[in-house]
Length: 312
Ligand SMILES: [Mg+2]
Image (cartoon, rainbow, N blue to C red; front, side, top):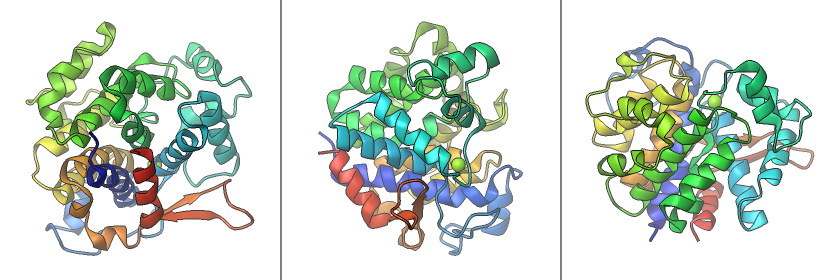
């Protein structure tokens, strides 16, 4: 049973985290709280670094593309998702991950492009599949644990050849499923880890453990392990949606994505009403490549409707 309020909270919450974190990308730890010391200060959707206040980045843009594909195809059609990604990438979005761009522009077919890229580069454990997984997580939640984790892996594999990225996205889908059902995702970690591919279980167990802290990360948080670990840490160490995403952005580094992942989980846990209205009011998601003459832009109403339809 999926709670609609939680589904909207997840999709809108992830977009809000993305837009909140974007101006602080690649900045130092503590930059956000230095500028906005207290919860509820106002003005946090400040824009900067090429982003307008409230503008969501590639994380949310790709999540919307995935969601619309699932609805229009009546389920997961990986070739269709890949085509939408390519059309979007060709329209020159303001930001696109290096890994994702290389695969989408390779000219290789959808079912081999990511694997071929990984064979050559040996680097494909970025957070670029995890960051766009909230819409698919909402859609597959009602199918149960095995189905939602499998869908996550297949969607991640479209752009990321490293199984580490698939498993991180699968964990996120399952934690989201738990939260959407009204249960505590933190209490579901042990059962979720048991479903992770054995070669990848130990590394995720480390970053998802209660005593792990983002300062213990062995990679930049643009990698999938510390990104997911940081999102779970932010959820665990705070008690509201607002404080969870504040903590995520304040970690610095890949702030938009860490906050998008955190916002997806926290939005599902706390529900749509916990996402501050002063943030959703100016939230907007441009969709390069998908407008008729003018750029198509989704606002909170359209994002909420997308979440509702995905959870139907
Ligand atoms: Mg981004």
